[in-house]
Length: 256
Image 1 (cartoon, one colour):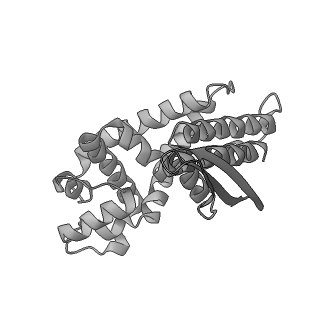
Image 2: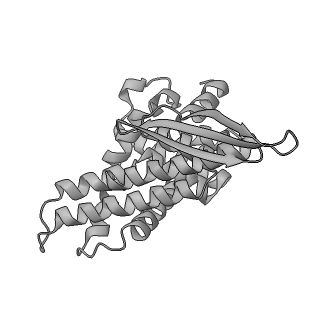
């Protein structure tokens, strides 16, 4: 396998641009990934455990955290993720073997090794981001809550609702902490909506002291939403309009 192909794969599938390909090459080579796999397994377990404790601390079902963590990090789950990102296509295997013969257990091990390599180069935040995205943690946990069945208190539906509310609050808080223009565009894109449109609708004042009014418009959940903003500069007016529109979008999202 050529380094250029591995580098392209890492950029496309894992969204990373490594400085040194050697640990990543080692991670996807049979009989060479064991050390990185050992390390990556521990990193994966820690990140998933921290994610669950921080995000679902309100759940008090006995054994819930252990069961969910086991589901998220088991070989079957990792093998499915490896298949989704075509990990076998970058695996280095003996000349006597074919890629079709690579087992799910091997690709799961390689995925853990890659997680170890990512952590060693990029640190915890990037690895957390990668694992959350690859394992689609929010979705998987919600599905688990739905299919787990009634707990001893018979409140699994209420628990699911609590989780959804928590997730929405985190999404809203994240969007509110960013620049409103980029936050609005990113939020709409993640929800499958078109980017917002901006239009200058008014310009008033003396030439040396102009005041701009910008209208921001988007479609969200089948509704047309509009926000206006003013400023002494076009950029300020656009940010103000984006903030107004973002607030409306997030309010609608919170109620849905």
